[in-house]
Image (cartoon, rainbow, N blue to C red; front, top):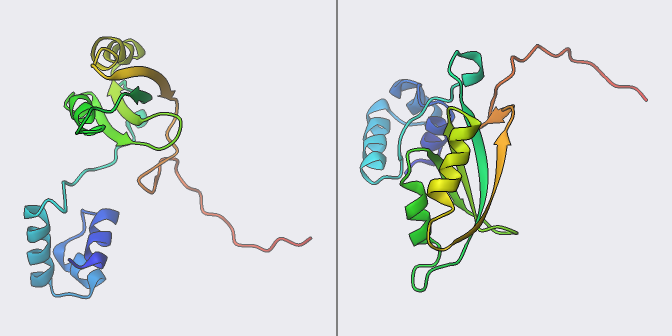
Length: 160
């Protein structure tokens, strides 16, 4: 798989096949065939827009939850991860190194909805030994995209 093509797709999947091919140094036909194959092989898992929901009327709360678990014999953390990521509220689920085992990122309409998810669905899962919820107050950058409108910066020199 052409890594330049993958990088161009990851940076902006709204580009045309012709634009993607040019960035990857391929013909549009080659690019289209590689994209199709990568989708079939599940190398490309999907395409998604990053939306600044704070600029809409939609109320939403995003939380990062630290989760401690007891690994399961023969399956490690995978079985518990599958139980967690099945829920619609879960946007992301990662195995971590450090002072906790997993990070779960969820979204809800209110603080109460997120708290209920943690208390009623996440914490009672067998093998989960503790959680710590952190609410995201403001997003500045996600997936390399800056949320604040950028003003042009003047070029200049700093003299000491």
